[in-house]
Length: 252
Image (cartoon, rainbow, N blue to C red; front, side, top):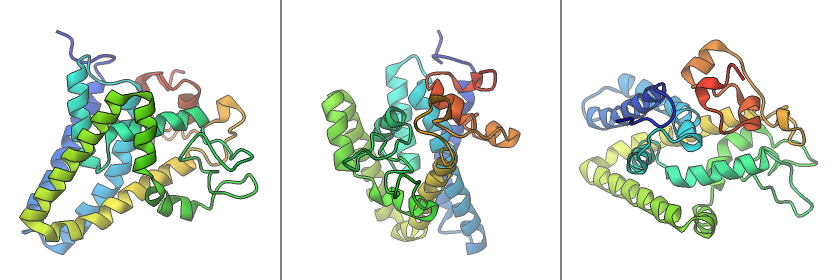
């Protein structure tokens, strides 16, 4: 019986997602016993790993769901939601809009198709200052607007997004009861992780041309970055052929 839908290499993504989830659990249960000089580096590792997961594992799940079984894909999405602290389904629809607009410039009314376009809050057709984009983009996210957009297009996905948020909320509530001090420690690293995600996204589009399809993204061909980030560096190629599997980016 075939479990994976596209490639045996997706097992690496699945394993990395599970290990990331296990890392968060380890961080929670280790917190009462570990000294600060262990907890701070572990928190920083989590921050970087949020960007790594969102731009690697989670991103690949959106474009080419790993499993043939819809149930397994839904369960994996729930695990990703808990690990990353966001609804995977909500992220999927925000990312789809990202590909609709390809980091487009605002129209005459100041609107962009791409909600996370680096030009959305810029001026005179220029990209936004990277510092404000990196540190404010997460705070600008509007779950209500995202939900409304999903519900309009796919009511089933809208319900699943709410389920993911409910599971995440229940997980946080249980964690607060068990050890509220952990969350005081954890949330700054959580926020920093999402800032790292926007840092990654900014420089994968800065210098591109939203009016030229092959230049919708900006590529990095660094060997180690692409090895660890599942070929996310081939970003111009990815925006040109978003359904192309991550293992085929280099040959494309």
